Length: 196
Image (cartoon, rainbow, N blue to C red; front, side):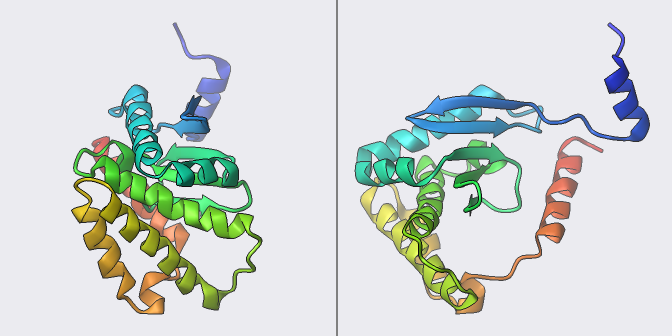
């Protein structure tokens, strides 16, 4: 079948096709997957995220109930860091390749999600955030990660990372990020992964 007018026009203008989005409910949370990596199976993403939420439900059911109240959903897509909370939409982002990378344990992915849940809790509580308060908020997130690592089986890697980050200076624990540069690095990594 030959490409339609829209596809030919996008190609002629050098515009990439909009990524496919798949919505599902996983453990009572709306999840939107934007999979831009053809080597990653959608089912693998949803299965891993299901394992993450099941682990949280098993070891910290109150935190999962709070997360369900505090966020509108989870977006899984390529991004410049493991996770983020967007207060404008009340959605948590879980980075696509982080979720499916078997070098990271389910506990580590859950730790990242719980970290972002603390940001969501702070936002839901109506706390006024200032540049000076960001390091304190990050330390609250890291303290939750530390607790999580101590709570779940095989949480040593979570403990190690959270402990190291808790000792950092305010500037290190809550750095200013140039998201434009970060997005360029993600795009470059994706091009390399596609062999371009």
